[in-house]
Image 1: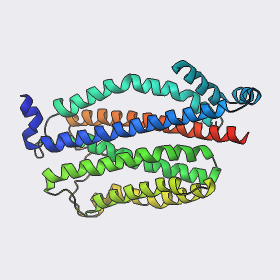
Image 2: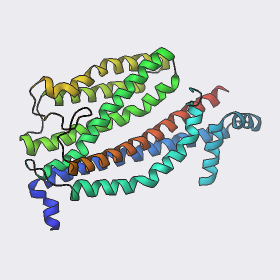
Image 3: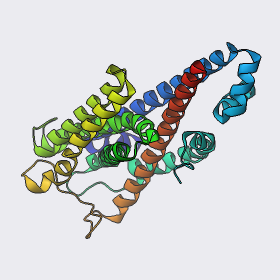
Image 4: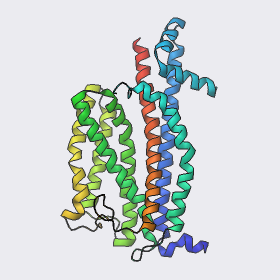
Length: 77
Length: 235
């Protein structure tokens, strides 16, 4: 029964390859996108660290995005 | 209304949306794969090779839908100069390219057992290949050009020219004699696909849409961070 499921009446190679290619490429794109996002978040934080306390406070006061990136990184760390 | 759709407001919602998609994605994927690979019946003519449809058709639909969205937003950006549309387009384009490539590859894998060939230069296949090339050109503008104004102009031009190809893809199977079968699912009029195959197809479409949404949100979030980083430097 399992071998029938795998062979699929001779079409198994094409069917499994189709699903396999889709799964693999989707996973590659997912991990690549996630890695890029993390890289940019890290770069943003590094940039924030280079500012003086006064500048940093100003950025955090005006930018909700900066606040959230900092909050997320604090949670992770 | 445009203020509500500002990048900052969207950015604040993104983590919640990603969390929601992550919480339901694997369950729907499991249901979709069970239906597509186990529960759905083989076709009376194509046998089990019809299961490739559950990857091929949603991929092609999303590939086409992404380019349609890109075209509409490019035109709107041209008229109203809303920069946010440019960032949305930049985030959608790689998803459209991925699904168009998947549609071509899985179509080729379906073509070999069904038609006896991996590839034929027929109207549907060639127009899909043209769509893939338009996506590549569109993405290359972001990689190769430096000035944002120029990127917006060139990419919008490519999107508008590329949109001419969309109705060609849709009607290619009706206008010309092709190896590719005519559409089985119609928005207007009755579909010729059985409900036992329609259900897995719709579930797999939902899986692909959720995946596309997840990638879009992450890419869009990356774009916003990139802009905010630039703004820090300016201050």
